[in-house]
Length: 270
Ligand code: ADP
Image 1 (cartoon, rainbow, N blue to C red):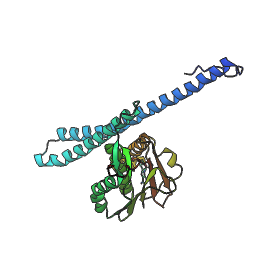
Image 2: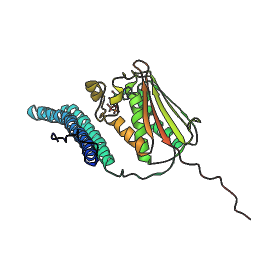
Image 3: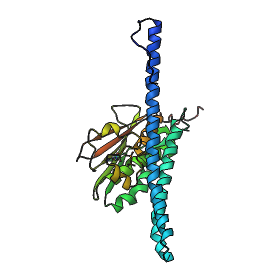
């Protein structure tokens, strides 16, 4: 890789070929570097819960205690094991999505039915944090998509909004088909959390990126949620955008192409 072509050649066919090869090499180098970093980060992420599990077990084995005192150890070990399960699950999802073509089946769906079900699932978490979780969902919102993947996408965004907002905060979900951009559906998740500084925004969708590494890992996240959310939005021909300012909360916007509504029912000709 370090032996690059001399690109000062003439602007003839050989010179153009040399430059094409050079551009391909740069792309390959970038892909290798991303892969190397992913492997290094993944090993690091997997190692910390494993170290914690081994440590807890070592202590329990070295200092025998009455049976009921093992309960706390088991709870801690279970928490770390669940973290490992979340990590491997998220890593597997991304590995499958990297495979070409993206293995993914689509079906007609109505987001105005899917979103309330997702919100109902997260309501207890918001209530436990005394947060107000509200929604304004236009009906119908028809799209062609993969139900499991879309649930995962919106769960990730709304779960983040809840986890990063303070107790007593508010999270608003709005879904509509904006008049200005026909053919698209827009879902916005707005929170009253700490917001994200401009220098972090370009890295937000990178795998394992966290604004505050230590603290955010302690909250149980894998650092892969937004990367997965973006992958799913793009696999649906859509996009995921973020708008945020420190102290002003964050808004994540998913834009998806909408499915054509079914043709109006017509009476059969007599
Ligand atoms: P995590 O599992 O750490 O939540 P994500 O990929 O979902 O990983 O998010 C990446 C990082 O982006 C988070 O660690 C957090 O620092 C930041 N982040 C995500 N959502 C929000 C939000 N709604 N408000 C503030 N920061 C956020």
